[in-house]
Length: 58
Image (cartoon, rainbow, N blue to C red; front, side, top):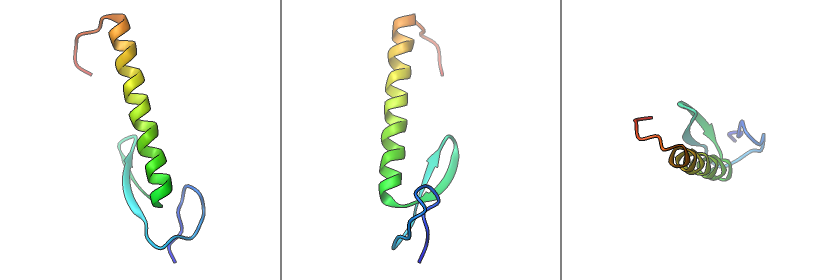
């Protein structure tokens, strides 16, 4: 059985997810958490950019 590198538990299958530009294989629960964390980080970055009045590209 494959083992998730994030939570160290044995799972039926692993999912490949890009985290910080690198592809990582993890279970679906960890993949969902990683996606949520990335979405929150992106949203907070947009809020900060809006507050600072930054109009340029990332």
